[in-house]
Amino acid sequence: MQWEPVIGLEVHVQLSTCSKIFSGASTAFGAEPNTQACGIDLALPGTLPVLNENAVAMAVRFGLAINAEIPEYSVFERKNYFYPDLPKGYQTSQMAHPVVGRGEVDITLGDGTIKTVRIHHAHMEEDAGKSLHEDYSGMTGIDLNRAGTPLLEIVSEPDMHSAEEASAYIKAIHAIVTYLGISDGNMAEGSMRCDVNVSLRPKGQEKLGTRAEIKNVNSFRFVERAIAFEIERQAEILEEGGKIVQETRLYDPDLDETRSMRTKEEANDYRYFPCPDLLPLMLDEAYIEHQRSLLPELPSEKRQRFVESLGLSTYDANVLTGSRPLAEYFEAVQKLCGDAKMAANWVQGDLLGRLNRDGLDITQSPVNAEQLGGLLLRISDDTINGKAAKQVFADLWECRGETADEIIESRGLKQVTDTGAIESLCDQVIADNPVQVTQYREATEDKRGKMIGFFVGQVMKASRGTANPPQVNAMLKEKLDALL
Amino acid sequence: MAIEHANVLRAAHLARLGVSDAQAERYVDDLSRILEMVDRLSEIDTQGVAPLSHPLDATQPLRADEAIEPDRRDTFQQIAPATADGLYLVPRVVE
Image (cartoon, rainbow over all chains, first blue to last red):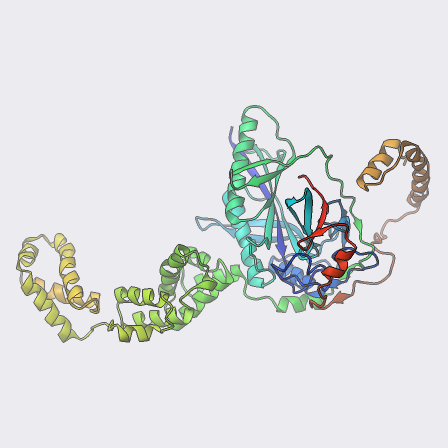
């Protein structure tokens, strides 16, 4: 049977506020345990929450970025459950009246097609603390620094049908929140986590199958792998005539499998009710319009501009707008050298290739945009050729703080465009290689094109790479053809 | 709406309250009568009346996003039953 996977995601994005959603404790990552957990975070009796204005502003800007309705009224509710890293016994969240209503996100697939994923809603909530299950003489250690950190939970409709689509969706969300600057999007530090709902149905069937929820997947790669595993697992059960159990599963990256988290406990019953400690949040038109005026150029807008005004391919535009720092880097290089296509090729090829090799991201690049732009400018104004440019780039990578111009000067890489100098090199090479010249003369027209490469190589070598290859090519052709 | 014995025990369990069978019997009666009282609301036409999410006729004030709370871990941990390495210790939680 042909099965169609149906996938929906809940993405938890940590908002990059300075302080917590309901208290003035710091949200900085990596502090000593419990040094950033104040009385409110600890749920000490008598304390009351006060909502962080910046968390609200960030949530609203996200809503505007995905063209969502922003209701004028939203309500915080209590989600009740017991766990030691949740000292209040409930998580303050939103349910019936979330801050962000229905919206949509465009995702770009590998073949360049764009697909729209509907967003059901996004709501604000607080994070819980951390439980450390290492051995504390049979006890569990609790660190409440993370308790009360503002989260935006973005809930998609089940609009995705493959691991690839789900992965593209997470990347799109990641790009939006980092462009907006409302989250650092750092998955390794838990700034973005996601729960994945997967079910299968016979292809063509409308009705949804029973779903399994995979909790807390925390990297782009794991999302893809967890879904791939889950699709296969469910297909196997269904093929054998079995039934899928609705349950929560955990993805184990070491074993590359999902496994049931179900304990003997009954299904969760969170008994949501409006939080009496918090009043309804009212947002008027003027406030929403003010937040709209603060929106930066978003990934989809940037992508479109790169294609339409800079003439890049959809593929290039998509790669280069993948993150805001990368897009900004590319734009700086492009402005300096004035050649978008060349800038795109260098950023995607040499730069990203080396960054990838060294395990760095764009913000850690040893070569900054000014240096690379300066280098490309010297290619476009014919000061150096492509081969010399690679040498300069390798030198820039060594981080000696030089500019491309300084390296070109000190290493004598300036391209020889002086016709006289090139001509004498060509004459020399023709004189030194009589055998190849004879072969050239005896070859057929179509073979000569290839054979000229040998002579070009010799001239480039003699010029220590500084001759202009197209110029050498043209001159050699003229001279050799004159001998025919 | 009638409350049954099992409802009381389940609510007690969800709230982690220790309720004996005898107590549960009494709560069946108490809670049923409370719900009966609330049920009287259904006699009123509430069409077009927005649900009340808070009894106060006010909206949520907002706080500036400033990290102003000092580290008072030592003070807070004095009343904790057990701590180690800055962590609060609790009976082992088995996943």
